[in-house]
Amino acid sequence: MVAVNSSVTLTGWIEFGVLLAAGLVVAEATRYIERIRRQLSDTPHVNMSSVSILAVTMLAGPALGAAAVVLLYLHLWWRTWRWTSGVPIYRAVFNASVMILSVYAAWIVVHAVPHGQILDIVRPQDLIGPALVIATFWTMNSVLVGAVIALEDGERSWARLLGSWSDNALEIVTLCIGVLTAALMIWRPWLIAFVLPTVYVLHRSVLVKHLEQAATTDRKTGLLNATSWRSLSERAFGKAQRYRTSVAVLMLDLDSFKRINDTHGHLVGDRVLQAVADTVRRQVRAYDLTGRFGGEEFVILLPDAAVDDAVNVAERICAAVRALSFGEEGERLAELRVSVSIGVAQYPGVGQDLEELLLAADNAMFAAKQAGRDRVCVVKGAPPSSRVPQADHR
Image (cartoon, rainbow, N blue to C red):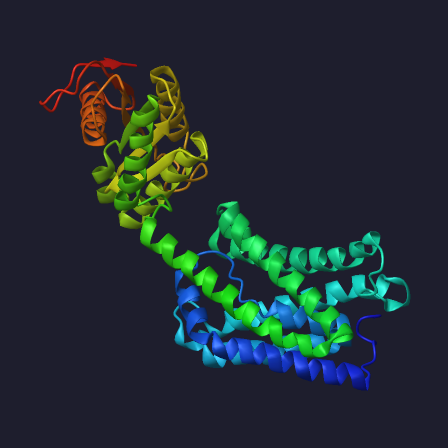
């Protein structure tokens, strides 16, 4: 009730007008960038309108903060989102509603500060108030959006429910800019002019990152695509040659994947690919290079990995994939089980370049297939020219 009954002063109306105008200018200038970002994004989306929304809320109260949400989101819908697939009107209304709830949650924190001086920062400990406002706004927004995604789409990864680390960092940065914008309005209002190009460039830099990800990432699995994996792996292999260190390659192939597609359909097949990709990603280090090589085949490059280390990783992957479940008891996919066959090769024991190392790992993977699938094979000696190498079966 405190938030609902807060009054609006003439100064608050002026601040609302200036900040709303600034938000509309940025939204109009970045509308084409926003369309592309919307098309490329598969996680909760950060549109950066929270810069103006949070600043209005802190200065003029929740009523005008909510009004800013409505007007900015109407502009976003009319000029940007209605031209973008995947953003129906009900979703835009939901996003605006979540922002309004976040506004009122943040205002409760603002109002709790004695005398309402949330931006009267003269000591380091005074930063706690604005930090709590940012945390409250972000938490309310993220939790509500993530909960609805979970209810609508079923179980999904945390990155898709709450966004990736970089997505959340971007949202927090926009909220920080919102706090700084509110402070500038009190201290030197004309300095707001410098906020506009800052937010515009931030929009463009995020778009560049999305375009880079789209160019280097396999759309179905989120892993590196074959071209990007090979380019990065060539560099890693060259480094191993220069510094006389080891590097291992794992070649993985889903067993009987065609049968899964034929029996359950390609949508289930795509779900299996995604689940296997997520499983593989969890079993390797952050700096290992994991890619989709095509179809149901994956490849991993492990820098500074001995043969035994690479085999341990491969066996962990086999066990984790074998344990995957695609439905509860009684559901259609409850009995679906998948497995992978993995070939392992290591430089300097095998091959003189990346192509020879890949050939050796590929041959070892086929040996694992011929030995019964769902197992790991390791190349011994130089890579053979035939399709079936001499390999250890693990």
